[in-house]
Image (cartoon, rainbow, N blue to C red; front, side):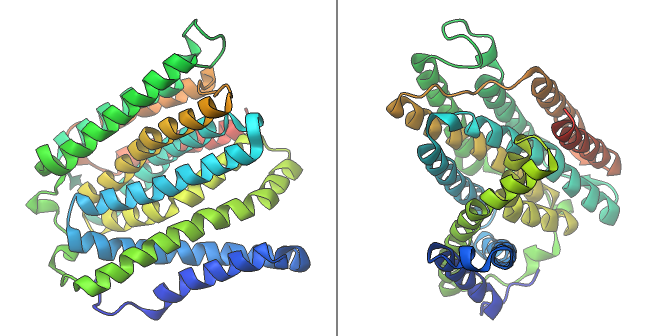
Length: 364
């Protein structure tokens, strides 16, 4: 993608329109217009996602890899955390499983859906693709440890019955999650930055695009935050009609968490897909796996603090069916990304597991 010095008008208009729609929602236009306004909110959300992807690419192209992918992952996850915390505070103790459901959905969407689509799209266009295995292995090792410690181990501790941690255990796991994610960021950006950089063979056409001027990058950074904030708040506004639609269909409530997680992750997903199609699989995997790590490493500590301060019992442990799917996803990802080369086969396997996850959620 050639990044122009001047930003296209639509990338500036999209976040403005999205925030105007949010303002209209707060003024009661949604109640007055009903379903028509819901469609407008959905259109505003889609425009905000596309604009966020564009501005993220501008910022990433200026600061280079792997910082560019880290900026988008942390920005999206930080706003996702704010959304989950606000919903927990508003919903009270009844929403103590929201963080678990959202994080698990995000991990499954990323490990299987996002990674599968990227591998398949890249393989269809370029055949066999390569990436730096050391960086991906570090990402998967960290992700596996945090996922099991936060979502599987609570089912087997005995201090607190059920899928819960005691307060002391929860604090310890929250600190461990931050330590693991912080160490990963240090390795990715300072100590072993070369592990997360594409080799010469996988460099895409974007590497030769002119670097945008600093003024354009500053504008894009501000507009990126505006887009991400609007996307998350629009997703929150669309949650009630979405929940009503899911209930009308008789589908499990967990499907709502999957849809919301998919919407929040859409900017990163599109950016990762574009990178894979441009034969920059390393950048694509940095985005995908970095998003999963940020989702767990930042969300769990935040909701742990909220639950402890409010005296709630935070439900973290996933059920047996979800545990099987999580472990299968981790094992398959480790095997398929274990030799630094991918083909259409790996992408197909990941997408099949993703399809099973969605189907089993709808038809448990």
